[in-house]
Length: 144
Image (cartoon, rainbow, N blue to C red; front, side):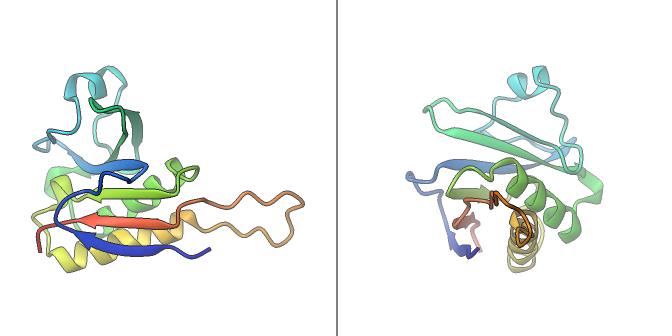
């Protein structure tokens, strides 16, 4: 399994899924419909994810960071792992830092990458029917 990580200022149009990191009590994100997320029971709790159709028809995922006051690189790492598990059938994912944008950009991007790589890992050596993650490209959307 090999995942290519890149950064960009905006999410590429060809990504299979656009994901956003969301904290409990956070500011939300224009890509996500807060009312729909609430009806789906998504509150931004650490490790939680929800995938839904966006306004443009593309899949949009929300990944929980936990309480807004506790958002740190470890919370980003855990959210990345949860995203990898939730999106393992998709090849390309663009991730916006969302409520983690106030963190150091490089540290947050590294933590996100670590979480995604660890969450996508599967020890399949002794499985008769291995089913590894299909994620092979991740774009971290950040402005620094």
